[in-house]
Length: 172
Image 1 (spheres, rainbow, N blue to C red):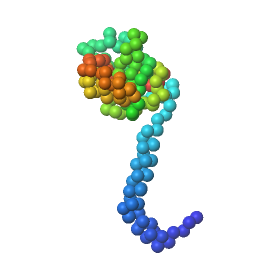
Image 2: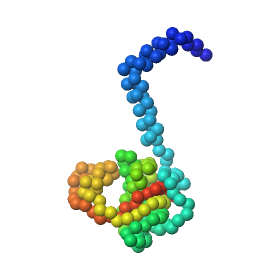
Image 3: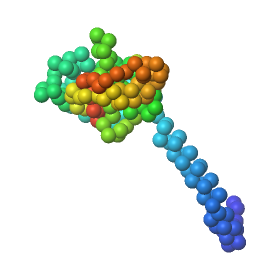
Image 4: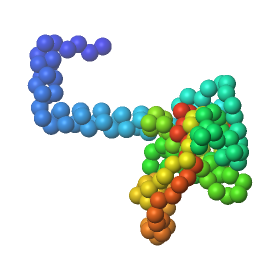
């Protein structure tokens, strides 16, 4: 056991008060938090990101459009993840059998999903609706997905697409 006399506490206090020490402490605290924030568990079966209700209506990604009422659907949607935001994991794309995809965004950036969620079947709980996605946002999503500059430059104009604002995503 180490015994610190009052003089030791004075020296420590002086040392901590220095500008350099404050900056070092701030740097290490921020560095440590970045690991905690970016730490994500693996997308194993049963893992839930956000909040998914146990009860409620559920449709497959292929039947989502036919389930819209007044251009909206509230409930659960099942599908396979084929793409994930490479920057933060704040969105995924679910693929329909015709090869097209539907964007699923974490509502209010309330949760993130790991990169290894690609290829997993999931249940998404949220609200789907047809929205206009600007050219700028489409390019932003392409950049987040890790697309090449050539692919991003080919994106022109806005697009009306079905998107889901998700309260949560459960890996099945």
